[in-house]
Length: 248
Image 1: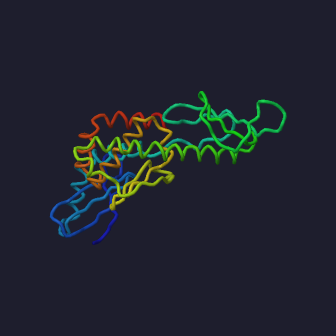
Image 2: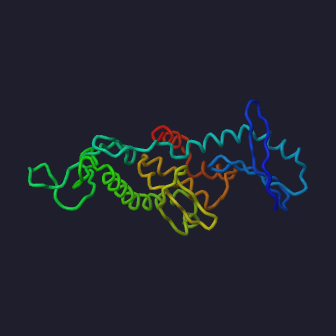
Image 3: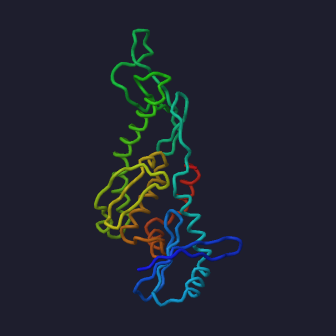
């Protein structure tokens, strides 16, 4: 197996691609979520022929790169102080801090530090107003706990979209914050989800989960993958666009 980095010109744009030669009969072009273009070609195919095939698929390649750009988390880092807003399942909640009880009145909280969702607020209890590090710690822990409950439940529901749900059962599921991805699926069937996905609307969460479940059957982003995604979720493009709009 040999790897080369090449590029073609397409109008005013340059498309770079990673060329991999193997003992195979056909040429395959795929676009990865990070925008990387992979071309797998027979060892004997001439470089000019490969470049010609890439150029013919250039419009599709650019469309896929644009599509995946919207699949990445774009929300800027949130601030953690009283009054700042944060999303949960697509709805805005404002941080409200209730400091620990000090004997100075009924507006204080007693008990252990934590977060409760109360009538449009994420109420952070038993921390100081100015302790932004503690506020951030407890809010992120709350999001992770909610993700641990909601995401596995939604994953199971979205498995039922497939004609054979038993064929799209991940070997494992874990949560891990990823700066550029909402989710990923390993060749062995292990599914990793970004816990910040719980901030998105539920229909967008379902889109990401369905996208990753499709990878259990089709590991790349070729035409077969998108045909499958269209079959099990015909409105995936609208969901993706909403994800881009709300989480941008």
